[in-house]
Length: 81
Image (cartoon, rainbow, N blue to C red; front, side):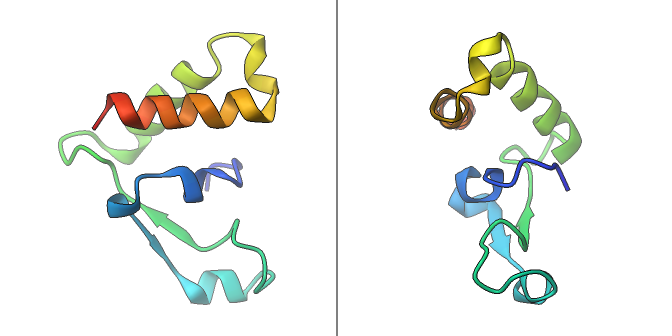
């Protein structure tokens, strides 16, 4: 759980899955819940990937803009591919 509701859909498709049971516990029409993720690099734990992602995304106050936030998440994963 990250608290970043949009992150699951932005995580690289080959490193994410959907757990319908988790989504059903919330709102079935809300795709913010139920994502399972793994690190794009098997040598790097998910926790460390998330820490690096947040450092990249939140490097300045511009990240408060949802478009900038989304762009930076996409940049991070493009660089780590």
